[in-house]
Image 1 (cartoon, rainbow, N blue to C red):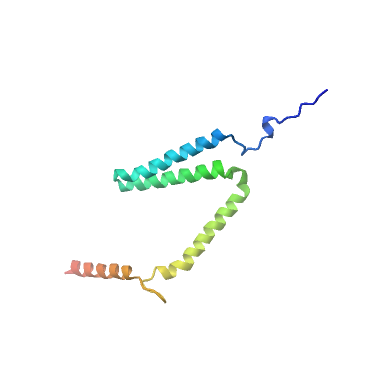
Image 2: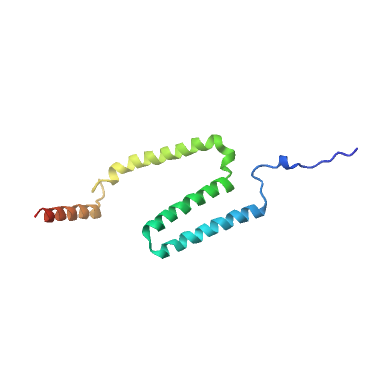
Length: 128
């Protein structure tokens, strides 16, 4: 008897998708991109910001889940995410003590000093 050599549906990798799958995701990302570009044309700042960040989160989710196959990497994703958040936090701590000042060793923040002076003038004006 001849054996049937072939692959069953269960043997396919979970991330193995046809071209139509990727074209569909690309189409969704394209529509979201168009919405995010046209959104500021309406002139509502709050709606624009909420829409822009909402669309950015949805697009990041789609790319991470559909293209990067994050679901197959569950074990390591938490480690990577917390390591990156830790790196961002360390960078913020290292830089913020210097940047949040109005002057440093080799630089001066003229804009911050001007805002402080303007506020002092405003407060002085309001007192009298």
